[in-house]
Image 1 (cartoon, rainbow, N blue to C red):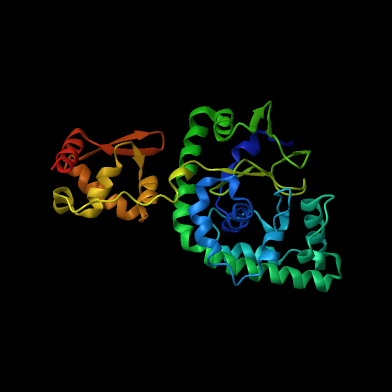
Image 2 (image 1 turned 45 degrees about the vertical axis):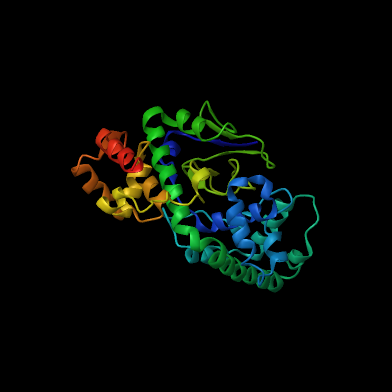
Length: 328
């Protein structure tokens, strides 16, 4: 179990961020063990066809058999949404001493794979390994994650919008209880259960960073106690992540509204926020907003504020119009 002691100032400094490097590393777990999440099997099949030219021995060694990842490979974002290359530059700044320490902590008492043998050598050997890892991660990102990054980012941003509302409505207790059963808030201490690592540290003004992930299957923190307090956790909505947008046949409704608006209307059988709609339709939030304005002005959708979010749903007129078009 990992425990973070959080004072009032630390809670006030709790923030969310996106980490493209973290998602890149966490996705390797799905390649290693498809049983972790059947949701990602379509993505896994497509990626396995594209990584044949990469050094997969070194790539897979970045996640230990215990499913831990050396901390130097997942630098904490300094801003809300850093670019992949910005985070990779942070990885490149890791010293040989830190790389040795973090790899050792991730693998524990287990043997190192041959692909990581250089970590036991001189500093120059470790630096060479670090550069090879960075180049490999860059190439893997380009073929496996970057093509889906907008989709992944919209999913994680929708989750953060929801979590911010939970924090505003019920404070830290509701926020953490709603994320995952393995995350517990008690007497000013955040506990992450069922962890390989065991330590308790005081945040003492460093705050807390929360990192939603599409590829995480449970919450986790750093491997070692020297890292800033942070938790990456499985975000909401992954069940529809790889689902195709709703199809719209050549109906009278599509002819009347246009296919994009007809598709949007078909989606709004449940209340959804703009970011979530954009993710499901695989378009930009600004495009969704334009269509929603037209549909709302025509009385086909309703909108209601829920905390900080505005949720849209088919109006009675919109439902009758869609049902009439479907019925011919």
